[in-house]
Amino acid sequence: MKIICIGRNYTEHIKELNSETPDAPVVFLKPDTSILLKKQPFFIPDFSENVHHEIEVIVKINKIGKHIQPQFSHKYYDEISVGIDFTARDVQDELRIKGLPWECSKSFDGAAVIGKWISKDKIQDINNLEFNLQKNEEIVQKGNTSDMLHSIDALIAYISKYFTLKIGDIIFTGTPAGVGPVKADDKLIGFLDGEELFNIKVK
Ligand code: ZN
Image (cartoon, protein in one colour):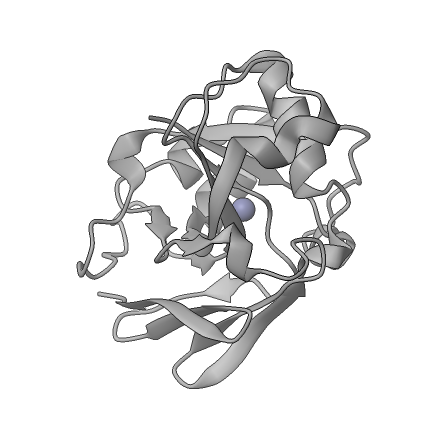
């Protein structure tokens, strides 16, 4: 399986990182080794002094697809959750300045937190869905899928132009504003539509 991630999909987050708004979605990949195993803490890697949390809505592909038309995208996933795209911001900043790929800052072991999956049928409106991240009992990131520059269905259509989507692939749909550093002993809890879907410790 593969993880396809979208960058710069919320205007307020683009502003906080002083990035430019792209015409097309920004796409990068994480390997399966980046998935944080269930019930494991997240260990801050020794190559970074500034690892940030990025909570994101994620969807799981349930059908093989290539060149998917946006009006059919909804047939290619039936589970949704939230996850964290952990980012070594100091490493990423260096790579960005040099115009180099981001993978070492975002695709390292443990950099992909996957929450508990919930059925899409339980969701009233995928395009108006609240989610948030709580760090040590304080809400640090809050988002709504209605603020996405590219909707989930638009993203699936776009991604499948380049990559064949296979069963079990996961899409990270971008983070809203409020990204920030994590430190040892932090506790991170992710919510989608008021439901707790992950709960991890930082070490
Ligand atoms: Zn992200």
